[in-house]
Structure formats: C-alpha cells, structure tokens
Amino acid sequence: MKKQGMTIDEKLNSVRAGVLGSNDGILTVVGVLFSVSAASGSHFALLIACLANLISGAFSMASGEYASVSAQSDSEKVVVAQEKRLLKKNFNKEKEVVKDFYIEKGISPETSSKIANELLELRPLETVLAVKYDITLGHYMNPWQAAWSSLFSFTIGGLFPFATLLLVKGIWQFPATILATVLAMALTGMISAKLSDGLLIKAIIRNIIIGLITIFFHYFIGRIFG
Image 1 (cartoon, rainbow, N blue to C red):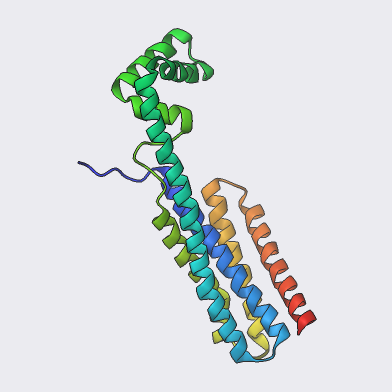
Image 2 (image 1 turned 180 degrees about the vertical axis):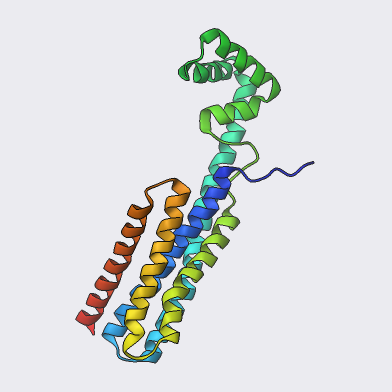
C-alpha cells in the first residue's frame, strides 16, 4: 500500500507548534534571566536558573502539545467511526448533506445531486468527512510530531538569550541579550506572518514589543523582590 503524504494541515500544525515553541523559549528564558539577575547578583545562580528553565520549559511545551494534539486526533477518530455508522444506517440523509453543501456553494440542485451521487459512489466516507468536518481520512494530527517540534523549537528559541548570557560578559551582557531577544522575536514574527499570509512588518513589530515588555516586567519584578 502506498504511503500517503502529509496534508497541508498536518504540515502547518507542526510548523505552528514550532513557531509557538520558539516564541515561548525566547520569552521564558529571557524572562528568567532578567528577573533573577535583578533579584540576585550571583552569575552562577542566573546560569542555573536559565538552564533549568530551558530544560523544564522545553519538556513542558512538548507535553502540552502532545496532550492537545492527542485529544484532537482522538476526536477525529471518533467522528470517523460515527460517520461510518451513519452511512450504513441513513445513507440518504448523508447524501442530502453532501448535496446541500454544493448547493450552498452556488451549484444548481440538479448538478449538486449528480456530484453527491458520484462522490458517494466512489468515496463515501472520505466525501462525508471532507464536507461535514473538513477532515481528510487517514490524516490525523500527529501528537509526537507536534511534541518534538515544540521541544526542539523551544530549546532553539531559548538558546538565543542563553547563549548570549554565556558568551558576552561585563557591561555589554544585558544590552547584547536584549538585542538577541529582539532579533529572535523578529525572526519568529516574520516566519508566522509568512505562514499565515499576514502583515509582515506588523507581525515583526508586535513580536519585538512583546519581547521588550517581557524583559521590562520580569526585570521590574526581580527588582521588587530582590
């Protein structure tokens, strides 16, 4: 049996998890970095806090994606089983649903009826799933794919501020970290805009502002409790 390729929804789901994971990695690590540095002058404590946050955050993000996508995949499988039963018990009603779908798209009732008959004769279950739920039979969201995507992207995103912390010393450490965060957030903003056909400049500016606000609030909180 020939293996089916991924649908666009499956690909976008993995990319979505990756973009969200990267954003979370950047903001989580830089937030810890500035809050701990403001509260404590210990470079070692800052290093351990960032490393621990990077590891725990990556696994937390991955487990969350796995649970979320697993629930979605399970729901889709339940729908498939339900539609199999409906096609056996009430085929004519299912045909009316398909016919109405094409009528709503502006096709005449006569032509819609012919389309419904032909499609249900060739691929009954696939047709009903596509019309009623926009589901492609056999293509369920892969929870492991989403989990790994989130795990790696969170880690890569978090490495931007973390690597800056390790490589830059002295008075330039925090300005360099802010710059690294801005560049990383601009990159994820650009990727998300490209994937969603959104407004590129707006997405980049929005992400940069979110990153700067995150830095400000974490540093402010650290100063209060420091």
